[in-house]
Image (cartoon, rainbow, N blue to C red):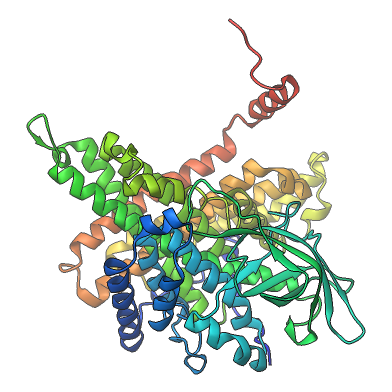
Length: 570
């Protein structure tokens, strides 16, 4: 039977929008068991040895492909089937274990991490999650071994962020097969072996397994990209491709859900691959600023240099904490993690870009040279805030899902007439009282270490403010809140900041309990620093919801559009 979605617990972040903290979902922090840790450590060691001794990212970039020999070696080490069940030749790692190994790819080469992510996180994952036993037995062994590579075929010339409105069409035939027509673009591994293709049909969206060599399937020409040059990004064309009935994943109508759930899973490995890259940026920055002498002393001795080093270290800690809290939600098997996955992707891609910028600044002109690893990373990393869900779209997704969850607690919102002050006051009264009560009795994270009590109190207060801000947006704009993207951005960033703080408190509490306060002193300092910084940023988002210049922003944007560009002379 195909794997089905099992969601028992509601989303942790949806509950934040409702002013509630579901401690049982995030406490204690999901540290790996000893047996899992041993398997993961062995896989990490294997990956690190190969990548250090045999893989050359510059050669891969020159040749435009990571190399079939690289894929074969990774396959022999079972690093191309990290989460695939052992019965199909994989390592059978948990989501947390899989993402930890993905860090190693991200540390060495952003392109290789993308190729491996496309193959495993989104290429193989639909089959792993939704394939029947027969489908898994047919395709997973080759995919796990690296004998074949997988692709996730969704994006089209006219369907990117709006993935629901696909133009690729699948027509069901009398014998149960599907006749597939359309065009896809920007498809990693698009010229490889096993393509999970998403299309529309009269029966709804469908997910079809298309194999290399099928009549009517063609690829190319290949896209030339700014970075990730060893990733084969393809156009894929379907001209009356007949797909057998047994190649359908799930049921007709399941395709869009399969695509979205696959992306929810895939975004987490991007987050941890970026974390691996950030760790490398920090290593390079530390090495350079320690050796480089200016004005009679090492660069690392200057406060503005230390500030950047400290920021990078703290940012890694925060991102790592939220990434692996999210993978822990996946490993539970009973939690809705779609919003957390989106927030982790946003945080990782934005923070990774900022960290890279700081590392380059610390290197000065040296990092601007084309043969410097940070210059290559600059080209490779710029795509991360865009693909697997553009960050602006992901922010809207988080905010609107949170507001929708809250609206279920406010049955009067749909009929509220704000133009009628008397009626509005009467209807708002019970909810205003509710907010006052919550203000005095905020819900707290249960199970945190006592030494983090102040930070726990702060998270409780921020959660109350999130509920109030989301409710205010609902009551002010009603259904038109869907058009208020600047409001959505602020709500999403506030929710993401609170979630990151919860992750850091959870992780630090687990470490403090395990190792003791004295032994964990340095980690606690980093955790507190992150929590204070994040708290200030969340407060800024809440303030911006109340005091902003959105009207002028809209007016200026309209004026620029009407003028066709900058319109002022001297």
